[in-house]
Image (cartoon, rainbow, N blue to C red):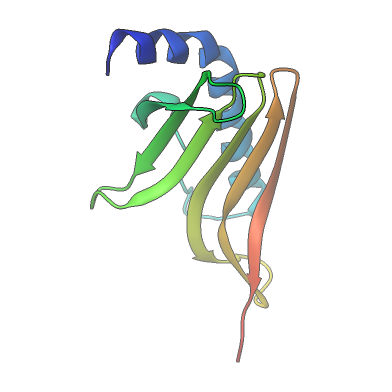
Length: 123
């Protein structure tokens, strides 16, 4: 990671940690008994991406599973807002009619919203 990317990451560290904690709390709230681990800010690979509207850099982090496949992403916009997704890919532990694809999070430094991404089970 280059110096500019590290500086961007340090600038959003507190918010990023809070986002990861909120995603983990949403996963825990679903009731998985085997304790699914959510995202950890420092486990992502980070790059800067130029925002075409402002011309400034946004910070993009990608989480990968142990096989190297993408399993989540977090995007910190220059205006302080963010969006994150993290894969769960499991049957809902209490509601058989739902499959949990993942958890999303969005907001800004003062407000973090999360929700599970549910898909109906067919058949």
